[in-house]
Length: 190
Image 1 (cartoon, rainbow, N blue to C red):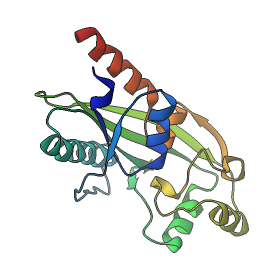
Image 2 (cartoon, rainbow, N blue to C red):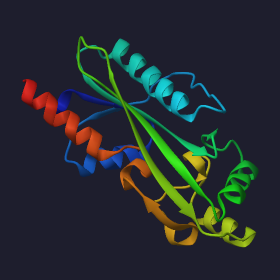
Image 3 (cartoon, rainbow, N blue to C red):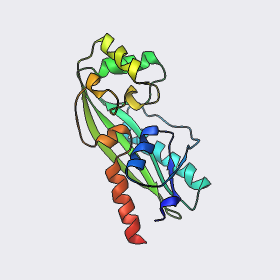
């Protein structure tokens, strides 16, 4: 696979950082899609949004290999995405406080003239029991509105997170193990 022919279809700084740390050369494109939301089906929400982003990129860049993703939170069977307001971010943290939730990232990977492959990664996060002042302290340090679940594990996690299980980069929004494995498979094909 030609390294300069990879498109990352994402506005996420965290996804850009993960790919850059892998040493991959890529171009960032922000897909112009309407994301869907199924309140009781987090897996479907993430998968369909990743595929929508991939489809949009493939229409514009048909000769590129494309990486797109969508991350949501599964909290007791309820799909939670990015909060629309600070009040909603606070309500997320009140629910998460002292509880565990699952982070789902769907990754859609495609090469020219082929349908995308979709992968789903799951990790779990246990929040500390949080007081309202601790929640506001975190939001003073980390802007919550552009992040699934209103937090970023790579920023000030010691304030909010007791422990996590699974892929750290999945919790950030792009599981690097999936990307590395896919790139190796593509290199072997060429």
